[in-house]
Structures are given as C-alpha cells and as structure tokens.
Length: 146
Image (cartoon, rainbow, N blue to C red):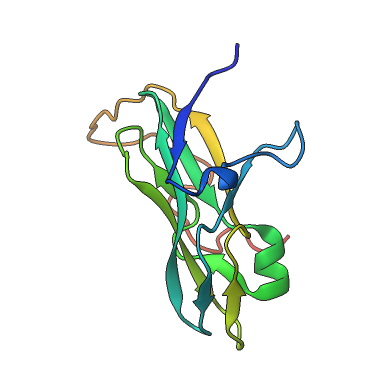
C-alpha cells in the first residue's frame, strides 16, 4: 500500500516539486528556490519552496547529496535533518561550503535528498541498570580499523 504525503509548493515554485530521478530511488530530490552563493567556510540556509504535511508516525529526513559533497565540498550542517510530522513551515536546507571557492547555486539546482520514513512506536523505559554486551561502554574508535 502506498502512503500518500500531502505537500504544497510556494507560489511560483510549482516547477520545483520534489521528485525521484528513478522509480526505485530511495530519495526525492529537493531543489533551491532561489539563487544563493555559499562562501567558503560558511553556511547558508537555502529555501526550497516546499511545505509538507506528514502524517503522525512519519518523518522526512533531509540528507546531503553525495555529488555535491565529493565534487564541490558542499554538505549540510545537520545531516540528516529531521522534519517532524507537526512542522508546516518551509523546508530549508543549511548548506555548508567546506571548500576554498564560493559555491553558486541557481534556482532549481538539486541541493539535498529527502527520505520519508514510517517511525516505529517507541517508549523509553527507565531502569537502574542495563544488561551487559560484548562492546560495553567502549565508544569512539573502539572497534579499530579492521
């Protein structure tokens, strides 16, 4: 069964509606709704003209595009960004230029990917102690490079 997600585009941005490049892609392409220059070592909040109405129990994740990251040193500050079901404002993407040259975006450029997921019902249960595991409390870098 296909879940239908309601959305609207800002006036004049109907041509920027999110879409998948291929039917079996996991993510919808999200586009810039205006020209933006992202200076080196700075971030810009880029508008998309996209507004979502996610049903309760769903989220949208906004993720960086791999081509922009690898070829242009452009990524997102909070990746992935989470859009909650109750949010009705415009989706904006916080792009960061990790490169040494200004990055020029034009209206309509693909700037991020959006994955929509159903969330499982979860309840956090406080306890006095947690069970043991093989890893235990070893954190960052504890699994080595092998």
